[in-house]
Length: 114
Length: 501
View 1 (cartoon, chains in turn brown, cyan):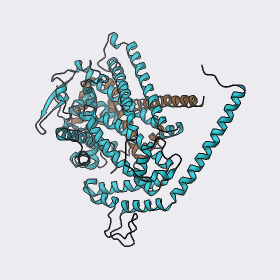
View 2 (cartoon, rainbow over the protein chains, first blue to last red):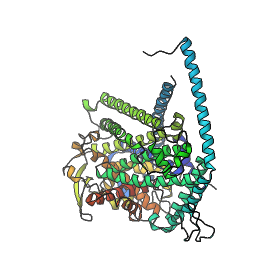
View 3 (cartoon, each protein chain N blue to C red):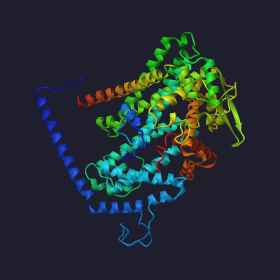
View 4 (tube, helix red, strand yellow):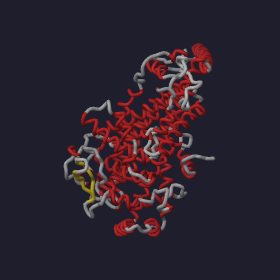
């Protein structure tokens, strides 16, 4: 039986981030950090997309306990695309930083051998 | 300029290299053999027996149990750490929490044996050291916060170092055959510890600084430098985007591009420094790559950049104002960024807004953690919040107690002139918003998950215990309070990730 605390989606994302080899607690921590970054990035795009009036309406729907998510999906038709794009961009930025670090490692390793 | 040897010199150099490699192989083989022999020695088996009793106790009786050190029969049953965890409220306010901690401890012990090939006594040693780390981690975080450091940053950065330290220490314990705390202390005092004689590490002594901390000041300085470059890049880039688009030379594309370049350079330099540091600590390049430190560092940096950018954009709207607000409940004045119109209702709003979204029981199932699109949906809802209700959670109380460092009527416009990188104690305010956000979100997550209140978290008690003897007077009280605020929220928000006991 798989008693993992991570969902299959978590594990998939951990693979993409290259942290699947770490302990579950560590993975959970870094997945959380990734998720926070994604939330903010998507939030900033949505903020630009919605008008002030729409934001006010969203706030009202939220505060009245309405279907905030449904409202948002309707107000931002390409919502899924925005999320997918931001997630891909974030993964790419992390990959680029990782690649840079790997390049530094390779350079130092070569320097050691020379 | 030094050149590569040629002719006879090249031949001598090649001979020497072969000789060195053979000598090294011989030395390693001898070391491994001695280590293997030591693992099966009566001394280590005795240490394993001691560790077993310390961890699992004597199951309520003394029959057939002897003190491994003296050989004398035990006169009193030993409860054992795992049973203590299940029973002592210090390890959790509910039975389920305590059971979780006990199970996690046992799992970690097993994992260290199965995956790292450690003896039971070595696994216990590692766990003991992790427990000390957790206490020191909490203490250091509390101290840093008391000194004005952003709680979230302090928690993450110090935690990252301790994780690195744990991996570094584990490597030495395993490779050098260290089985006891005294053995580790001996290794710490030695310039070339345990390299040639694994048995030497069983000697006596007390724990001393292992040299790791020596690297902190430089690392800290470099992190600060990166922070400054990031802040400047964020300030300029956020000024060119969003609804509060700013024009003028300062916010030109060229300025943003230059700032981005500077930020990337600083980031690269920090990565390079960290790699050097870890290599000096004995990590091979393969190990560094496998451990994923660079990937994890990249994730944290992406998080910081997104957070800082979001905050800067919020400040750019000009709808927020810093205020010193007196909290009659604690008697302290707190510095908060509040939205003036309409006034935010703070905590009540947050609970209302977030309840059910992260809940695993009841609430909106669309936002349950098991939902495949959970990230997207959370992103949607939380993402709209910066413009809609950010004021509510941004003005959550942050017990930082540094109100005196700020004037009472700072505006968002004035804040744009601050540079966190300068560390003058004032620019930090921008980062505190980050803390408020994380604290609020994490607190709600925690509340939802536990169906309980933050007051139930036992972290504050743990910090209190660990710092009791070390910090005097008001400073102690404040550090404990600050540490508890940060750790309670942040630790809870990541599922208690780093609080293992």
